[in-house]
Amino acid sequence: MKMHRFVTVLLALAIAAPWAADARAEQDPLRRSFRMALMGDVLVTRRLSVYREPAYLGLIERIRGADVAIANLETLFHDYESFPMHQSGGTWMRSDPALAQDLVWAGLDMVSRANNHAGDYGVGGMRLTSRYLDRAGIVHAGVGESLGEAREARFLETGKGRVALISIASTFPAHSRASEPRDSIPARPGLNPLRYFVTFGVTREQLASLRTTLAGLGIRAPGNDTQLVFGNRFVVSDKPGRQTRVVRKDVEAMARVVDNARRQADYTVVSVHAHENGGKTSVPAQFHVAFARAMIDAGADVLFAHGPHELRAIEIYKGKPIFYGLGNFVFQNETLLRMPADAYEASGLGRNAGVSDLIERRYDGGRRGHPARPEIWRSVVAVLKWDAGRLARIELHPITLGFGEPRTVRGRPLPADQALGQEIIQTLAELSAPFGTEISMEAGTGVISLPESGR
Image 1 (cartoon, rainbow, N blue to C red):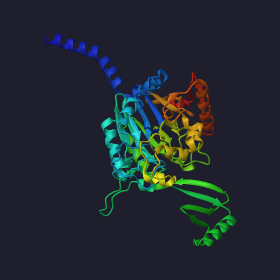
Image 2: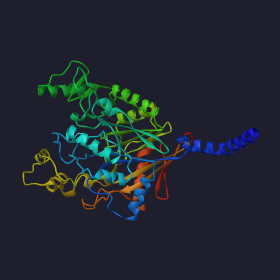
Image 3: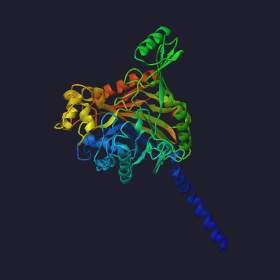
Image 4: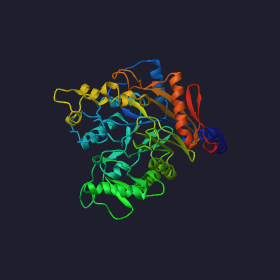
C-alpha cells in the first residue's frame, strides 16, 4: 500500500512539474512581453470620454492595451480653494477634478507632475491635485512635501512587472521648487528641480565692452575674465557661444534615486520637463542631453521628456530610448473656466473682461502663439515593447490635435491621416538623424531601428 502511494505521488509530481514550470515562467515578468505607452503633455480642461469616433476610440484602445501608459500632467485638479501664485507657468492651469476620471478612461496609469504648472495655485493646489489623482487611482511622481519626497520614485504594480516613475523639471517658477528641512525649519513642499547654469563664451574685447555697458548702468564688474549678468556667466573663451550645464549635485542625487528605483522595479522610467532649447525649440539644450544620458547610465530603462509642446529627437543610447520631446497629448489651455487678476492685469484688460477676452488678447485671435503654429498640434504616441526583458520594438503612432480647428474642438488627440502621419514621422526622422537614430514608416506607423543588442 505504501509503495502504491509512493508511485502515485511520483506520477503526480511528474505530471505537475511541466505545468509548475510554465506557471513560474508565466509569473516571471522578464519572460513575457511588456508594452509601455508614452505620451507628452496633458493640459485637459474638457471631457475626453464623450466622443465616439471609431478612429478616436481605436487610439484610446491602443493606449488601454498597454501594460502601462504614462504622460506628463501639466494641470492642477481643484475647485479654486487655493489662491493663485504671483507667477504661473505661463497660464494658470486648472482642471475640474472630475476630469481625473477621464484620464483613467483614456487609459493613463501614471503621470509625471514636475513641471512649470505644478505651483500655479501654490501648495494648496498641489495637495488637492495629489488627492484627486489618488482617488482616481493614478500613480504620480515629481512633487511632494519635501525635496526628498518630490524626488522619490513612485511605483505601479502590473500583472507583468513593476514600473518605477521618477519626475524632474528644469523649467519652473522659483517658488515651485521643493526644499529639505534644516535647523528645525520645515521643508518647502514643491516639485523636483533640475537646476542648470548658462555660460556665454565671448572674446576679451566683447567682455570689455559688456563691462563698459554695465558700468554705465551702475553695475560693478569684477576684475577677472568672468562677468555675471542676471545669473548668466560670461567667460573669455576661444569658442564663442552659449553653453548650458546642469548642477552636478542634482545629477548625482537623481542618479542615486534611479539606482535605488531600478533595484525595486522591472522597468524604470525618468520623466523630464524642459522648455530650454539648443538654439531652436525643436532641439534639446546641451545640459538636457547630458542629463538624459546620465540617467540611462544610472540604470533607467527609458527617459521621456516634454515641455516645448512640440516633437524633438529620439536617441537610442546604450540600447535604451531617450525621447527628447514627445510634444502634446491633450492641449486644451484655451478653455479655462477662470483666470486670476494677475493674468488680466498683465494683458492690460479691465474688470469687465472675461476669459475669452484674455485668450484672444494673448493669441491675437489665433494669429500668433500656439494656435498659429502647426507643430504644436501634431505629435506621436510612443509604444515600446519588451520581450523577455529586452527592448524589441518602438512604434510611433502619429496623432493630430486639430490645428486650425475652433478652440472648442482643437486639443483632443486623433490619429493623423496618412499624409500628415508621413509628415510627422519624417520630421521626427530628420530631428533624430544627428543622434544616429533611424526611423522608417510601416503601414502608417513610425518604427525605430534598434541595435541588435537591444533586441
